[in-house]
Length: 139
Image (cartoon, rainbow, N blue to C red; front, side):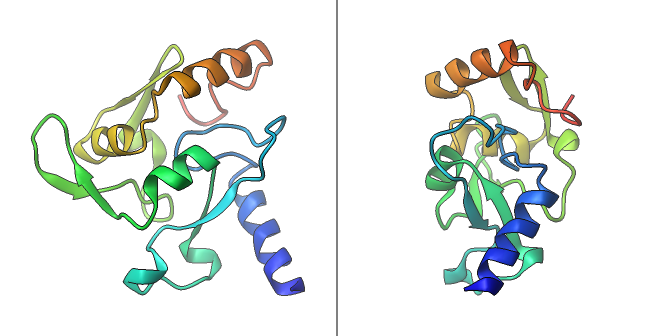
């Protein structure tokens, strides 16, 4: 049990206490964020630091065991954003409180995880008032 708590702490610290998909701060949220297996367990993904990402409940549940999604622009199946292997700023940009995918991976991730859902927009509006939106390093 101590090992699991230590791993959670390391994942949370590395993520800056933010969802590694949408950038939402865990501060002030009612639910504890999930440790997402970037490569799902069902696909052979191990439970180790290199394969874990901090994910808000919304992103975690929408991602599930998926690694691929459809790019809405090209219609092709592409990999979802991989926070361990890719840079967030390469795939996404902020436009106010809306998240824009600027690559096929970014567009597919925004669409598959519904990163601009009404719930995300409302939370981002409040986060903006608190000075936590956009997230540091996510420009």
